[in-house]
Image (cartoon, rainbow, N blue to C red; front, side, top):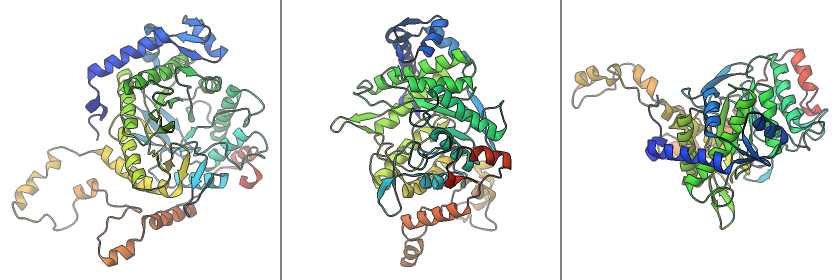
Length: 483
């Protein structure tokens, strides 16, 4: 298993302590803007200094919150439980939010609810995925829902999810018209609690993005407080752009964004001490020539490693990075950029790798072919995380002594060590020979990916819900997707 952290290569103990010191100064001297009166009252009640809607957070308040944030927690799914946090194996989660799709014919088009159904089937038919979540939200297909679009989308996720749930759906006046962002967030949680008939455990976690620089918007605050009141884990996300919504230096970006997220974590601990929170940075550099976020850049990984180092210092779980790319199709560039992003979590103590497959064009485009190819890369990441088993037994010294120089280890049955430590099964990548027969047999990577895609869609089976559960979901699902 992993015995060190990649961020230790880039950040010394002194580096992390210096970044920590500037995070404290940012919270105490600059403050964070909370655009919601309920949040301001929470801080006011606990003695924080306020100037208008700017909250100044003292070091003592930071330290008190850090004492109550748990390092790990367990989330209950329909068929299995999942341990998340520091010291646990890293979790692989899907992408969220892309509005457009690169289909198998290479065409780019708007993503719809039928595509989302297929992604849910993919997520729930392979062990590489630990979590099921809304790959995209507020897309065509939920406009004529029986209740609210937000409730229909949550019911849709619940219907197809055999695995623990992450809810990325942000409540807006467009998808939840009968109440506030907080009320909508609470209603979506309550739906999953009712579906699982579990009102005591963590049954889904969720998050929203803060509003850098150093601001938390009203809608995100409603979401955070709603989840806190429902006593469900919360992810705090930031996605700033250097020299635009974050300082121009990488360290400045790390400090400002970390302070922004930490301020929300403190608010949550004031509401519900001991509630799990996960910091979730996705910040990167800006290409000022086009004013574009560049998530395929090497600096993206470096910024992530800075946040991971601070999270480890404070003992707060961190989910970050992702198999992200700047390009528009599944090519060599996308493969390099996506692998680079995934390495930050695979080779550290980060708890979740989100946006793990299919992303292109900086969260704007989702690709079916790239999704299937990224899955294979993720299997490589799993193998890397396992590391090399080192022990007297694993030295194979007696065998080395027996075979000696010029010997041959290929004799008898395939050894247990070889079977345990060698990853060979790859349905998508080509690891065969290069004779004309081999080339004809393995076909193109797109064709191999599509064949796996078809097999998975056809093999999917819905969870075995009873009549009560089906009736509950049917109350919100569009007619097309009712049981």
